[in-house]
Image (cartoon, rainbow, N blue to C red):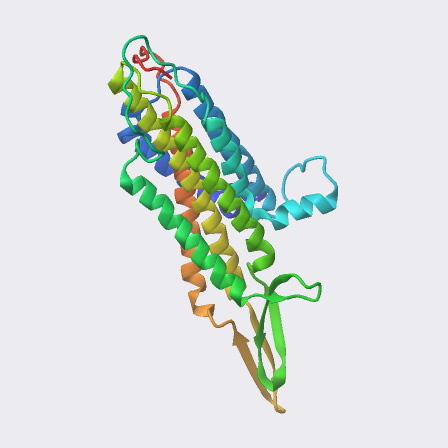
Length: 309
């Protein structure tokens, strides 16, 4: 297997699968619902690019530390790699901050519609329900992994040990509190930024061109939720991958004069399922991010609809 094939398969396969699904979606449905040229489309393209490009580079670089590294000290680069499970949350925060733009929608001359609006006014319930479900899954898996962790010799809660025969133990790292508490803080920050973005989209009065204004706000709300959900799915997928790696731990020792016994983790049988869930979650996360990017590419020969952006 060539180096490039190795990198594409082990580092970027979820991005490739996500791109393929997003392209199919775009061909079938996405082209009918594009953003018109303007500030919103530009901000959306920038936001999607800011999320996708660093994430894909970091995934490729994580495969044996492949690729040119930034001009950083070695220890800091190792710290960045060690925190790879939280990469998507950081990128999601940055991208949503860009996706908020433009903050103030222009109100066309004429009578504006003054109605009570909330951050949830321009999205379907299942959009919000889907995002909330992913958050619930992340918190559940994070707490379970944290409870299973133990302090290592440095006092950091990232160790997982299994007891063998005769009092022997063997262990490895796990997604424990050392990794998950900072990630939970980033998760909380992502929720706050997402709600803020939704509120800023919904807050201005609806212009006289009611249908176009509502369509734009629905589109922007969907993009914010899709970007946040993509970041959450990538984070959840990397948690599953980490736990799948922990589940592969095996140890053994000599028992008696001729015998040999081996042991695995209590959730060893779940390793294939965890690997599959990690693949699915990360692929869907990339699908959402690529879908945002493709839907923001304006048509070549089409006049933009009358939308106040």
